[in-house]
Amino acid sequence: MPAPYDLTRDELAALLAGEPAYRVRQVWEGLHLRVQRPDEMTELPTAVRTSLSATLSPALREVARRTADRGETTKWLWALAGDARVETVLMRYRGRVTVCVSTQAGCAMACQFCATGQAGFQRHLTQGEIVEQVAAAMRAARPRRLSNVVFMGMGEPLANYDQVWGAVTRLHGEMGLSARHLTLSTVGIVPGIRRLATESLPVNLAVSLHAANDSLRDELVPINRRYPIGVLAEACATYVAASGRRLSIEWAMIDGVNDRDADAEELVAFARPLSAHVNLIPLNPTPGYAVVGSPPERVRAFRDRLQAMGTNATIRVTRGVAIDAACGQLAATTAKTPVGLARTARAR
Ligand code: SAH
Image (cartoon, rainbow, N blue to C red; front, side):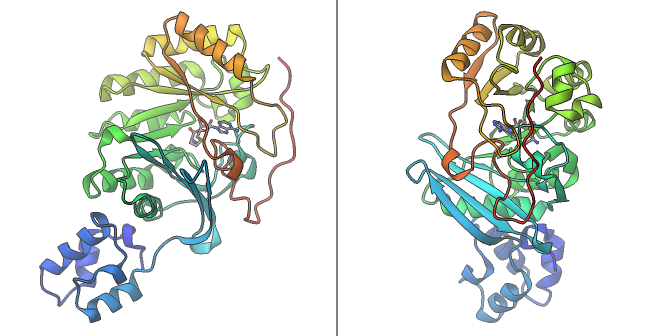
């Protein structure tokens, strides 16, 4: 039996065969608009509620939940079918509430400094497993309304395109989230970016660049060997032209590796023609990468340098470091997945 948010409306109708026609709408809206579990749909006759609860079991089982930042950040560890583990992070800010969702259990991209990459790939998530992470966050955010979804948790969204896009259309079409508040983050899967440019929903695109010359990027982000920087820039330009959205570039600041003046210049050469906005992320510590993050004054100087050369840049305020919920730290540490051995970045 599919999970609640993997069901299509027709499949739900088939489950409710014999019930009055309005029942399908009632349950569908319960799931998507009121974000209820079947056992909470008190408007249903008891028999229907009981049988739905028995057939539509949740896709995510909570294994652990931790909070940080004075209760403003919540991280869940979920067990999925087959016992894969993924994490979800809810962040409450003054003007918005954002959830960061996982799209794969583990990740095959092997970025050196990323805990998920260090652990390797387990499996793709289904659309329903992705949507249910958002549903859980919506419930936990109450009475506030969850406004933003970022696909920046475990996994590479564009390596699981169909399920991720299924989740995007479900969140937008059925759960009231606007495309402007949905952000896909990619390591730079060029065919995926090109395909995104053909979609009618203009979601935000973030590209995890981290290096703007091929020799360093080949090392930090190995998929660069398949889709080098020139090809990536072209795909980004296509997306910006097609969607009309501003591109973001993610840049984890790594001490002595990508935080020098020459790095800023290369980054500007990439970002300026695309009118992209740069997000600087102070590198978060992970078990398998020995190099530390740039010191705060270096991060600020790097930002100022980008600004002076005409590229907008902001420093991302890090949430959840204490509970391993920060960027790149999601690795489902209570799972049995071994984390890679410590590596040191080669000096340039
Ligand atoms: N695979 C996607 C989305 C998941 S990673 C992607 O690569 O974009 C989300 C962001 O966190 C990416 O920008 C990633 O490069 C960054 N990140 C990974 N490890 C990090 C770390 N240790 N410190 C800071 N940012 C990190």
